[in-house]
Length: 252
Image 1 (cartoon, rainbow, N blue to C red):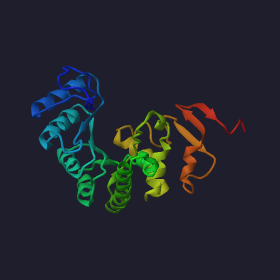
Image 2: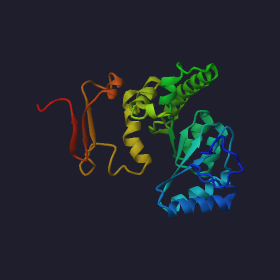
Image 3: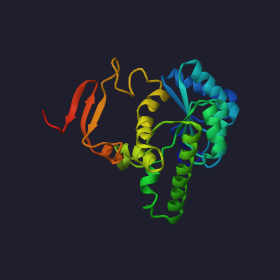
Image 4: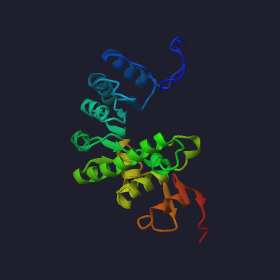
């Protein structure tokens, strides 16, 4: 991220992302990040307005795919989404400005949409700023409409929670619940967080479903999450790698 509020005159100030301008800088940055051990590259296709060009993103995708890595794109705007998808990214994070055309292109490119709507869904009505409250409510409504379109055309959806504060971390179930409340059937919302998310990360051989040979990572709840998705907020049993680390059901 850009260190907002820091004078541009302060050189070499630490940033959360590597800045590039031009195709060859983008290619070099991708190679450097892969060389440093990155197993995923993420680009900012927009930030208030479109940023990287299709050509800049495309060479990042080329370098990542050559090395067996995937590329995720932060894209909130329609044009940012379209640029990233035309460049061949593997997933669109957020996609708040999506429409049918963008989702159709996403499907054609066999990319995933990761809506990250949980934080907005839970805070849209409680924001103190009326302007921010209105913005978040609009995003929630757009996502509701776009989830319906995505289901209709068969676009791929994966779960990714995007907590905006430290306090929101650990509430990942909010993302599954929000997607269900906004139109995804419970089983599809759960699959977005399991088999689909595993596929997006290319980890489908190890996680995402309960099958022989995969990691024994399992949770259990008391009720039926297909009938009441909020059951996922009340995890009673956790097995990690075949080891039980939480069991509120007792020994019976």
